[in-house]
Length: 463
Ligand code: GLU
Image (cartoon, rainbow, N blue to C red; front, side):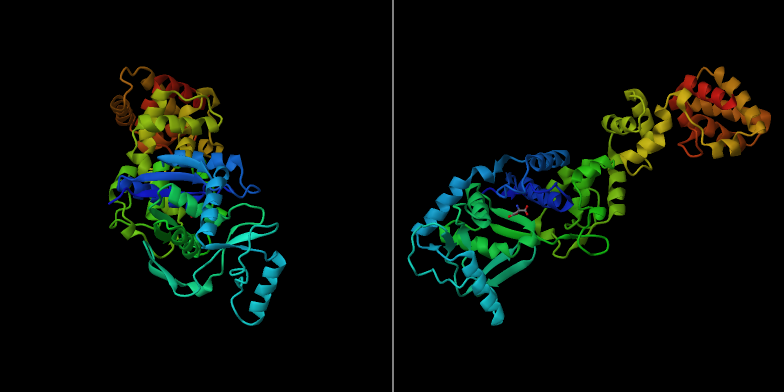
């Protein structure tokens, strides 16, 4: 089998959002799974709406997700000569013709067709006039008028369009520029694309693109059209529900591997496996398992997948990522050793890096800056509790082994000797050390804070 070549051709008129990222991912996976090539092409022919910032943002999004391309990025704005050469080729081989109809003429034809209850389309009146180039003239493709255009869709199964539905497509505008379909088809051919996986909003474009390819005598790639991603309400995905830039998920504390994992499962399945690394996706990917019905975006599920990937990562790998979110809370630059000690305490529970940073903020707050939740302090730092805290403080000050085991033994000793219930001292200590009533295990928390901080925080609570 010849090498598989897939492509991702975003228009830089918006950010890389969830739907685009999933299309990119499927094409990436198909190429990697088959040992093929993955081409990145920027479809920036709409000069008014395309911006270099959006191109940058799309490239950044792809890089963050780890979807490396083998070829490109190509820019359609730089390739007009190729597209026009193909238009010339179609004029020469008789598959295209010059058309002198003005936009008003075409509008009149459409209005008439509508009034007669027919589908509005260009009526082909310049087809046989044998016109040459001239001001205001465009070039149209001689679209087959009968029969149908059929293709096996990798997702939808066999698809067929009656050719009579389609009119003669403009392939070069009156201003001399080649049109969108001409550019796509020329590039797919020039880049050797064998497989096109894209959103089913492009399904209607496919017979048109096949007509141009056939007229040029170019091979037709295999197409697959994946259903749109819907919101949890089963309506079009809204900003609130995920139609935002993938980079927003980075800001929300998602790991790129979790976003990739979730996106893959949104429209593709491999048995009932939910958790995949990128390598596992590459190994398992097959277009046969792409869903032909639309998937609904579910943030709760994506959080669950993220929690999984957070747990699977080594603290040393998470540490630079968490550091960023700690800094964003306005806290001093966290040390590596402290980060790596704190991370395992939160891995069992945290769903995002933001949540982890917020819950663990007290570990990175200077002792003198730790604010105690007034309600928790009033409830737990009672006069009786303070007496115990003072005694525990003295005990800990003399403790040589400030490990989890050492601290545990010391506190158990205190509980036994004093007869106080552990519950009665645990929560006051927790409030003193963390400022709040919820934290990881007390001994672990103390051991990670270290003796100096633990004593300083107890002193502050007692003061
Ligand atoms: N540039 C098109 C888009 O962003 C993609 C076209 C295609 O996949 O053929 O929707």
